[in-house]
Length: 262
Length: 240
Image (cartoon, rainbow over all chains, first blue to last red; front, side, top):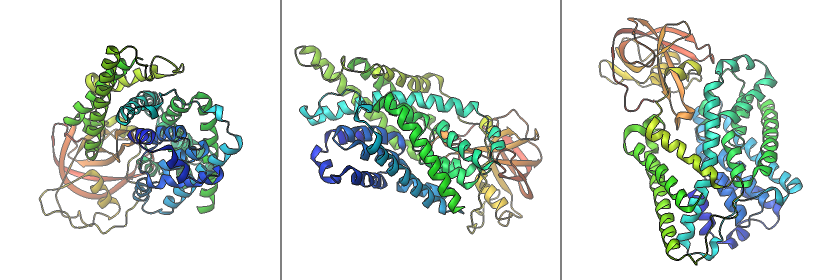
């Protein structure tokens, strides 16, 4: 949230014009890779992406950043390596699959996305205000908007975490296709932070590595709290299209890559 | 939601976070290392609220100046959702959800799933040697008890009913917060501790070369031969 407010107030508009390639199709991979240097979890990247769009970054690039940043930063990849000490290829598979999905979604948005699908909540014109006033205002604005939706998502995830018995998953684990879908769906429902989800994936050891890769690729991109926050920041018309598309693409890429590796 | 109301919500939320992080309460929900971030976040929320209140007061004194961002233009799903921020704050202040315990241990699979190929150093020279459940498990299962043989060992955890109805010693391992908590379970033989689930126990005993599989996720369950045990109050830091 703070980072989002910093972007909204202290980074001039012209910076983004210079930092990103002019052509949107090229801006997508640059923005996606930028996620590598921003170690944060996925909750933070939603308001940041909102701020980027507000500051004139092409939406496709901001969305690629939104999807890539929580999955491919060094903290998350290190945690994955610690959680899978005997399958270090999981780190490369997770990073590669996540980046690929983020870029594909960015380019897909360039082809199919429409500007009117994104409706950022109204915010005052911060440019005209003194910087510190604007900074605190942006902070408050982001906390109230994104935070409220975060509570909705967290309540849903906590309920499901308690209601769905893990024993039920045991029966699905033996079926290759169903197990991938089951863990991808579980990632959506559990809504665990990307910095910690690798440990949970490691403990789901009754499932194949491919299924667990799907869990790790889907989790940071689509889950209940993210859908809720995206609804808050970008509007519901955006969220109902973006989340299912990302989910489908993430499952396909993870399943494909998993089949090739294992 | 007016600017003043938003400020009040933020003060309550920031205050609840500060109160939890300045006592041991926060340890029920996150790892110890996250404390500075919690305090910083709490302070930031309170400052944000105070600045908003200040603006509001100035605004009231000079009603002719233009309203900044509130009272207009918010979509239907606008900041009314901000009210929900009160829920976690009130829960933290008044309900105080308990730490994860036997219920999680019964529903989720144990953490011992992946061998770590590391050279396990000898145990500390204390007698009995104090080990975390995870450490005991790794040494017992994947190092075949090599460093545990012939030593008296002390384990601390809570009682959780095992799949066969016999109590197991369990503890929840956190990577970062309670949302990612995974249980580590140790089966018991010998002088079986008695008590309801979630009773905290300090058990002294020895390693035995017996293992089993967790029916939930096929993880390895090490066993421990209890020689003596005592009930203890729940530790300030309930997680490993």
